[in-house]
Length: 187
Image (cartoon, rainbow, N blue to C red):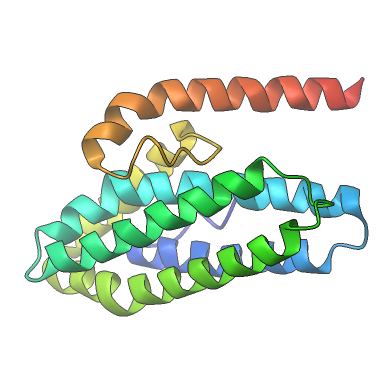
């Protein structure tokens, strides 16, 4: 995971965006298919967890700021489209002929989304939220990430209510699937 000693939620998420760029680079630069598949699975897991935490913690607070609803609605729309692309990629192998093209499209969407958050949503959070609350929000993001689903679930949606209702079951299923896959890979 990305560094966790960050002072507040905005710093934490910016650090995570940097880490996401590094994970994409690892997938792009992987020397063989096994390494590339493992790098993609790490990227997929990190993104699924990261987006869930944002949806549960930062978006609801950003909505409370002046102009926040429009900004968050745009980010949620981007996240929903990205989840759909990530779900498609998650069902593919890195050796699939369509994987590289879909990954490039997904990468561009993720980078555009992160830049929009940093340019539009994060300044709203900084301007409209008490610094101590921003620090508590960083702890809340870390807590949400500890229990978030590890695979994309675009059918669940991106609202706070659906994440709170479906998220724990999805997380349990994802983490079980991940553990079984890891155990089988060792054998």
